[in-house]
Length: 147
Image (tube, rainbow, N blue to C red; front, side, top):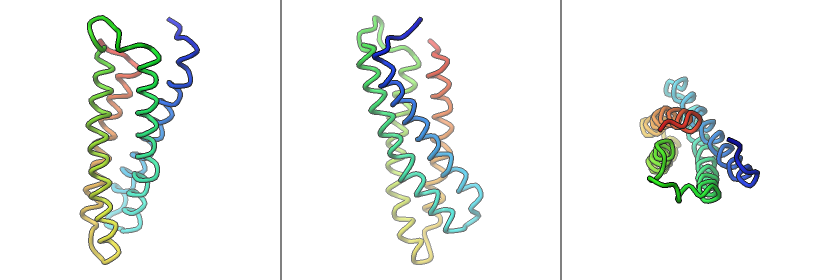
């Protein structure tokens, strides 16, 4: 089945945002795994979440909603397919976790300047590992379209 050309731009924006989001999460996860308490790497991982993953999340959600509306997926008989449910669930829960981890990590960065806070930053970056695993499942669902 070939999709109409009018879907290409919103779908591209969705996929681009998702790739940027996963890239930011990958940077944060790599930093926490190699940091071993080094404040500079923990701060770099946090900045990856703040400057890359969070904007990527916003772009991904805008593209997702735009694509959903353009394809008229809300008019499908029987409701949303499983892959859309997986996408919405991981995006909604992941967005909340990302936002909370950015808030906690902000306190960690502030405390890091005074010699503490590395535990808060490590916790924040461990959340990125969890989100990365969830988004890998979502990528599988979006590409494989089960159900």
